[in-house]
View (tube, rainbow, N blue to C red):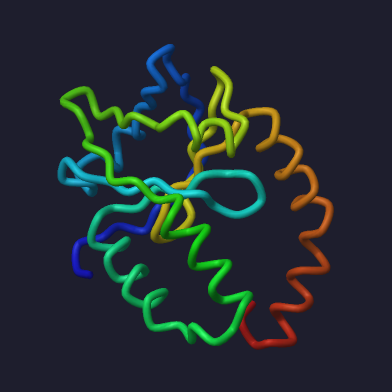
Amino acid sequence: MKNIPIFSGEYHHLLDFKRRLAIPVKFRSTFHGKAVVTKGMDGCLFLYPAPVWEKLAEKLGQLPLGEKKTRQFVRIILAGAVETEVDRQGRILIPGYLCDFASLKKKVIVSGLYDRLEIWDQREWEKTKQKAEKDKEKVAEELGRMGIY
C-alpha cells in the first residue's frame, strides 16, 4: 500500500441534511473518488480508502469461521460496510443506518487514526476523548511494559 498517508488529527465538520460529510481537505486525494464506510468501534464509523479496505477485508475473510465471536465481528464490519463515491466537493454520503448506528447529528468530528478516519458525533467524541485522556497514563505504562512506548 504505497502512497497511503498516515491519517492523524481532529477535524470539525457538519453533516448536511442529505447526510453528506466532507472529508478533510488534506486527505481527499488519498481516496481517489472511492471510500468505504462501515460500523466502527465504540460508537463511531470507520472510513477507509478503497485499497486499505480491500486489504482489511481480505484479512477478515481469512479468519476462522468456527469461532462464534469471529463470525459476529466479521458480520458487523463487512455487512455494515458500504462503498461510497467521493464527490467533486470531497464529500461522501453516509447511509441512514450508519448515521443511526453512530448517533450522528449535525456536528461531526473526523479523526485520523493511522490507516483510517473515524467519524464521530461531536458529543460522543468529547466523552470518548475525555475518558481516554483520563486513562492515558495507565495505557502508556501498559504499552511501555510491552515495549511499544
